[in-house]
Length: 321
Image (cartoon, rainbow, N blue to C red):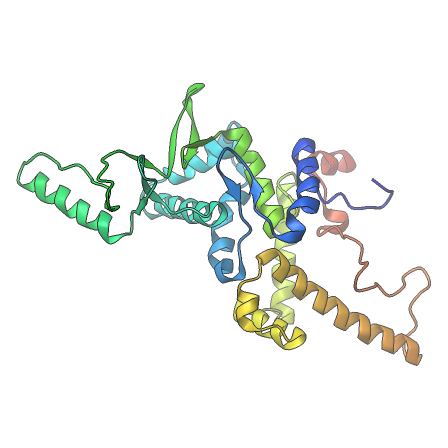
């Protein structure tokens, strides 16, 4: 890495960072799905699903190191404990994980027929009808009828769950994810976390290694700045602004990947600011220092989001001693 260059993969395991760099060239730039495990591929989310994807991506950004219990767990096991929380909290984490996997794997949550491959979603009328039959049989103390595949000519009664946590075959005290028959263990999930975040959020940076107090102070500072400057815009407003600035049709923008949408917004903003600053400089009204020239709207350097305060706990402790 060149001197002064920001390491945008700081905190990411070296092997995964190298893998992501390959994907940036081979998949990210053309928004292609990334082969993951077995039949599973990781698809980029689109603007159409922006809000639900952003909400569900909290499954990937959970910082297990913020709790004493989490320090002893893998990211996957920590997520599993979240889904086990009582009441609405656990149900909410289960729902987020389900919707996230539906989006990134392009699958539906439900049960899949082993014979024909048809998926009966848990929210489908067919499944609701079957649940009613089960409840009726239980009330009448009758034998519970098997679920029969509704696909014409199939009539199979063998199904597998599309998404579920199961005991780790190699360690019964731990758990792994089974998605469409494919096992995602803790190592595979670590890969998935980083790949999906970098695939969809071009400005994503891992900050799990930052001193929690510094991170807390930074987040509060950013909140106050947004509040004082009243800087906010809804997704709808951003979509309209991009359409007005570029001439792109609204329907086209909704079909863009979140990655390209985010990059487009940032680039339009950079271009406008560059034109304003360039015009002001040429007019003679403003003179930029020689050692701080106007940043070009294309060749902007990657900046550290935390600036000089972006330090690990060990760094902060060392400097304070």
